[in-house]
Image (cartoon, rainbow, N blue to C red; front, side, top):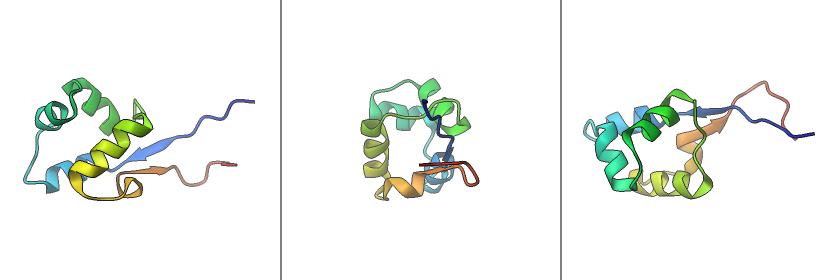
Length: 76
């Protein structure tokens, strides 16, 4: 049975706290599209481990501050 994990993103909050960094500015630093950043922030797209680590590095925070598993879900 394949598990689907819902991920909550705190990316927008961190981006705005970083001197109001725009989605495009972050996308440019990560070499992805602005739409990718938008989708991650809205929870429509879960970033790869590599992308999540790069984002965490840019903001100087652990990945767990940017993304978390939705509470109340059955996770094994």
